[in-house]
Image 1 (cartoon, helix red, strand yellow):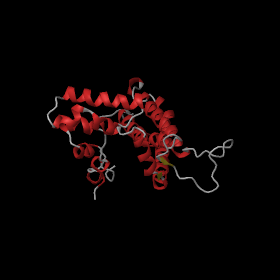
Image 2 (image 1 turned 180 degrees about the vertical axis):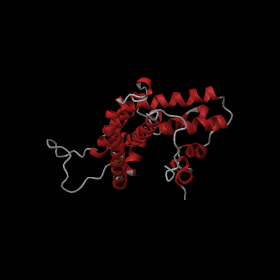
Image 3 (image 1 turned 180 degrees about the horizontal axis):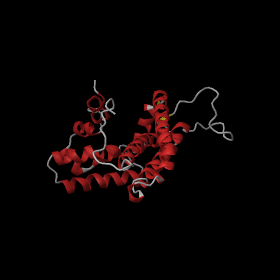
Image 4 (image 1 turned 60 degrees about the vertical axis):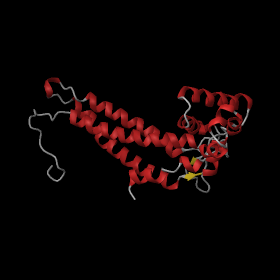
Length: 233
């Protein structure tokens, strides 16, 4: 216990209180849920209509026995399923907290299953997730294609903020941007071109200022700083 930085319970019966066990299994379940969060995103990004990233696909690997073209995100799907198992183990641990007269052993049969299984399962998930990320294929060109499907609408917020900065009241600026944005959807038009023709926008923004609102590099200017803040240099 000393090597682990643990201390004995200050007061106990023949049974150590199981709330501390429940906290431990909850931590395992939370770790699994965090892994699943990434796995679900990868599964979505691998969909045919998105295809911005996908799991590594080895030579000779099969995605589907019936459809040879498929490359399924099997690792991510596996991680999603195992995260559900961990959450079930956490619930089982919570069910172990209330014991009759604080001394029955109904918890014992549960813990004989969940203690080894939960720890081994999370260990497996961590290794599988690390390998998944190491082999992940990313397609930035496809990301740009998907951004361009909106015909510039992803830049509506910079335009809104620029109009406000130039003195337009926020609600009025919102109405101007929204009005032009709806035309993009309904008339299959280009957002930037519509704004360039709008009299209210032209009053406040010259062509250079409008172009700056649609600069993708400007939107990504803090990416390196964010990664450094989270992961270090």
